[in-house]
Image 1 (tube, rainbow, N blue to C red):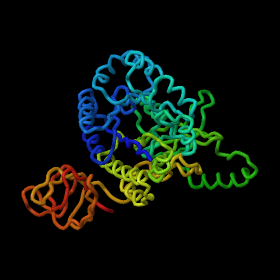
Image 2 (cartoon, rainbow, N blue to C red):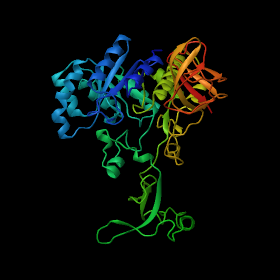
Image 3 (tube, one colour):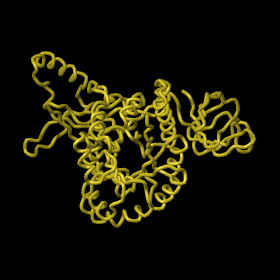
Length: 454
């Protein structure tokens, strides 16, 4: 079987290097003004040029993400700003806006274009359309099942296909979310998403002003309104009226929500027959489906996360590299790979829509932030001499902890028996960043990452 490309996110040059070190074939990085990661993005023209140069020197690929849905002002400046990036010779541009694609292909017809997931490609006819437009690869919508992906592969055997296999999912249609723009005036489709779908909310009872239609707070929790009693009342009404298929008596009521970090800022939310629209998705994890995707003949497996940590990049690259290599070699799936991904902060995992499942499997109703399940990233090895590694600490660890040394040559576990400060004095605890300590290590450790096992 053909080995698909493993494509990793790069929010910085260090993350790019880690991705390559741990098994990536290619990375994608965005121009802040024209990609959907305007925040937490190190890449300017100088870094893009350096990244492309380093990638090509290593025999790797570097894609530039330019996938916003442009308003007129950005159309005006687009060709001017993209020209110096094209001169750096990236391997492809990831784009979504048909107008911008047309402009680039008219001026630079040899430029490779990969169609972004933002374009929501869900069928083989659309793939053929974009192929006629000169696009060389389609990043398929996250809304597709494995069977649908296989059908597209069969109908479009000569088109490159890319599929997301890991990372955050949006409660929207492949990233076309409006919540952040509605609540914070930060448009996700222009690159400034605040992840409003993952905030923690309280619900307050509300009434509608008959003159303006505005939602008004009535009774607040702690001000005489018993939410538990209200829920019991609603459940009782539901049991008596909805067994015959009627709508829940509370379904047409207006509510106000309050985000935990913004006390006193009440925002209206309404529910209709389809439910409410503020939900927090679990994270996508499709490592167990890599073998099927390889058999289907998908050309590239993509990991989401340009704003994630260097540890996330290294760990996911290493795990999915092993999954791909096992699939190509015909080895059975190793369930330990799932366990290793639990070492990353996550909101709970789901296979997304690759397999059809009940709707409640996709949502995390318990927490809006990432939770560590198995291990905690605590440091990076910065130098190594005489059996002692100098570690830049990221989080707390101590003598007696069990550590995992994560290295491109392979991982291993140790029990930390001693630790020293840079003056050679013994210490028991490394309290966290910023600090450097020395610990005894054996074997290849240069550039290794260190996790504390929980």
